[in-house]
Amino acid sequence: MRFLSTRGAPPVSFTTALFNGLAADGGLFVPETIEPWTASEIARLPRRTLTEIGLRAMRPFVRGELDLAVLEAVVVEALDFPIPLVKVEPGIFALELFHGPTLAFKDVGARVMARLMAALHTADDPLTVLAATSGDTGSAVAYAFHRVPHTRVVILYPHGRVSPTQEAQLTFFNDQRTNVRAYAVAGSFDDCHRLTRQAFADDDLRKRMALTSANSVNVGRLLPQSVYYFHAIAQSPDARTVSTPSGNFGNLTAGLLAKRAGLPIDRFVAATNVNDVVPMYLDSGRFEPRASVQTLANAMDVGHPSNFERMAWLYDGDVAAMRKDISGVRITDEGVRTIIRDAYARTGYLLDPHAAIAYGAVKLRNGQHEAEGESKIFLATAHPAKFAEIVEPIIGRAVDKPAPLVQALARPRHIVRIDATYEAVRSILTS
Ligand SMILES: *Cc1c(COP(=O)(O)O)cnc(C)c1O
Image 1 (cartoon, rainbow, N blue to C red):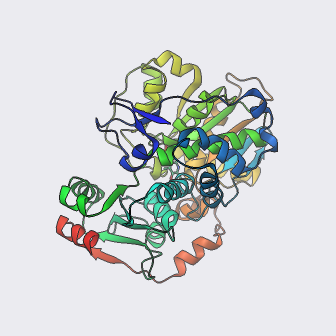
Image 2: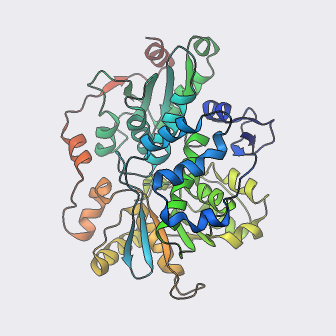
Image 3: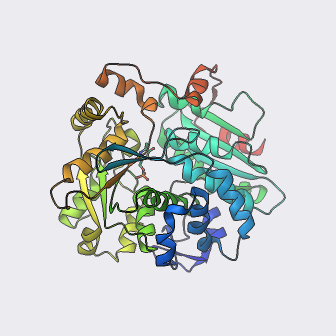
């Protein structure tokens, strides 16, 4: 399928969109057409497995560029963990997106993207993936590409500015001879970002190697995220409301694409922390990005959400049309603490700060507009053990850590430091 730019540049193939990340005019790629699912395909969803749904949802986008058998292998290998819908209380269900290797939903998009890139990279030289991260994206990318043939990953993160858990996950592969390495840059996240931009702008370097980014706006990450919206409805066919904890709004945009393809979701809740640029837009009709504020749900601390450009494109800039499908809800840190404590006390279900915002947003809206008795889904984007230092004092007890996390934390850290200079980065890339 061809992909358009939100800013109007000529269309390109899926492969080009995947490896370029951004359109030539700086816009974001969007699919030229969204093929609808038939009513009988939707009706049969409850009898489909996650990988069958993944294959069906991804197929139109790669048609003509990737064989069905190869796509099937991509989906089967990438989605090798469950995405269960768990009842939290009557009428409210958590779609648990945190059963992948890094215990957060970014595993879904990153794992599919990694395998799509490997399948579509045809040059003899291995593909080099260069990514800057402030935390979670980097570990999802590291684990996603680990042992994917013909790829090499270089991750830059700001030394001393990621959490101990994040650093343990980021550097997990550093002491092994693998295709993935994370470097602790003596600088800020902005330095890491600047260094990757310099590399992508280095024509001489790009002649010498196949270089790509694993940016969060990449279509290879965005499109697979629509798969679990179908999988959610497959598990609860009567649910019509989905609440998505949002920062850069990739997750919510993937839900909107699923709706355009015929998935019967009537209402999306755009649940944010105090970085509420999109809920404000839904209120006022004005999109006013601003500097981000640090919160407990730090993966959602985004002051200028990139995917808003895709949302505006989908609705042709019509805020009234967007309001028919999306409601905004904003929740403070104090609210997050109350929600985690209350939900745990009442139901025994433990929320991480991000899922707490999505759950809290559903509860706030409950009884306001919707008919009673309709079931609602919220997306649980991270395992609470990933945020144990926040959650434990709130509930007053230790959180059980899943095995992959225990393993990452127990491993001696192998930190590779580099200066925040382009020479340092270039020499890593060319060595
Ligand atoms: C990245 C992230 C989010 C926000 O997702 P967006 O697609 O950026 O809106 C929410 N929760 C967790 C745990 C995340 O890592």
